[in-house]
Length: 273
Ligand SMILES: O=C(O)CCC(=O)C(=O)O
Image 1: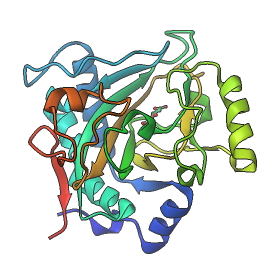
Image 2 (image 1 turned 135 degrees about the horizontal axis):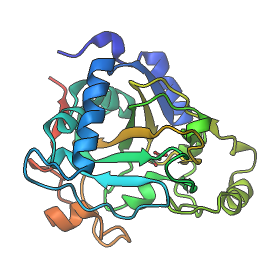
Image 3 (image 1 turned 60 degrees about the horizontal axis):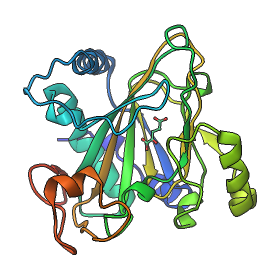
Image 4 (image 1 turned 90 degrees about the vertical axis):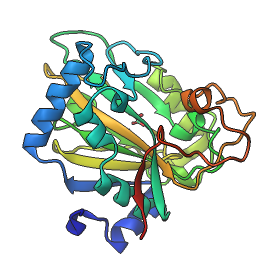
């Protein structure tokens, strides 16, 4: 049973619809956070409880480690990636009857004392990487394992940008943020007003797949650790022939055009009774 006090209210859902993001209360307690960080270290040390390695990181930007599908490798991380409360929150925000895991991603930005290099995440919309899903009914639940602020490179979102459709400026790996911002100001005008998602460890931010977001460098001497849980409506179908046909889930499940994404590899987090 999930704690209904943590579910978004009608007002929260209206906020998400208007601005394309929403921040939860602290829903992961400190004991669980300690355990999660320990298991994150285990995965980074190559200790896989299940015997299966995560999907190879697509690409590491300087100073940012991205590791996809740790839920294959570690039971504690898996429990978070398929957390029923997170799944139900996502369903409420997306206004869907069910939510399924699209994939998870561990994110690690080392502190500057260890690695003095920039770790910007360029402005992007997640859906620019997921157009193989026919509709953009996807949301990312970003679980903070540490407190996050501008100083350690918290995520920033552009409120309302999810209503603009897919933009031209879209590159997670871009390090020249000034160049990107010039392009975004040209296309979005006054709408380009980024908001930092500052949170305490254990809070979770949710952003729509079309919300423009990115993050700056971690300038502190401590790591910034998190898991991004990418969730989709349980009704999501495959659209063939987009530039995202190289997505790992298309390569793994080889669906036919128009088929629903289903199966054990894409676990259901929530289904309305
Ligand atoms: O962790 C970050 O700074 C960016 C993560 C991100 O782009 C996402 O979770 O969609």
